[in-house]
Image (tube, rainbow, N blue to C red):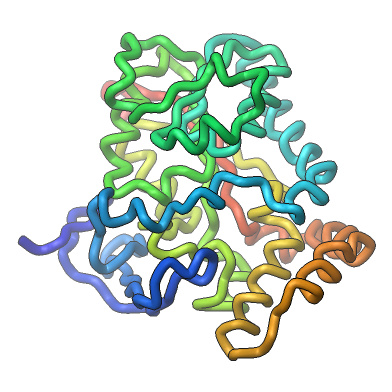
Length: 309
């Protein structure tokens, strides 16, 4: 059976690049990406089974690195901005965080006053999460959690959708769980960003094969519209480590390693500790021509009904 695009059903694709796992180097295998000729959605040419993807999620995937800890004060500004936008739309209520990862953002949501529940399919994520919120976290797949219909006011799917082999199934379950006019916050890497164009196969957020799909603003909105979500607004600015000057450094480091240039621990620490340079780059990232093509897409959607389509 031929592979079909999850947005438009097209069976015709164009090859665009092949890349290796630069982050964890689990294997030297190259993974091809191709693009739907009809709607433009980019995905792995061969979608792997979850059991085949599991080795590419080692324990260090759930650890907060030294560089991320150093950058956290600036990252918290991003978190606060996102929470403010959510509060403007839904000041309180039940919130589900799908794929909580390290649990850092989940804790911020909880501390802001939301009645938070988090789920992640990895026990390692639960172990890495802040201890004070672990009683609110579940290790399970969304479809197996047994939440009642129309239970949540807000669902957060942050840096998750691109990892899923079948995001349509996840979005259908999110739609079922949201109350009428409930809010879905989606955050994914933006394949159309300047950094992606600059670094190509060495782009930090490429993350093959963990990132099964590579979204642009256009393809993300098409997928959400197909699954009965209406776009409300987009959040501009930086989004923690994935959309910070530190990700530029990491992309540069991948490029040096790809060219067999030494990127030793000393170089890593010097670059990570260059906070003044990072701050200057953070300010530069606010320039309009960069801000129009951010590293991450952060968009709020509202649940609609079939009658609204």
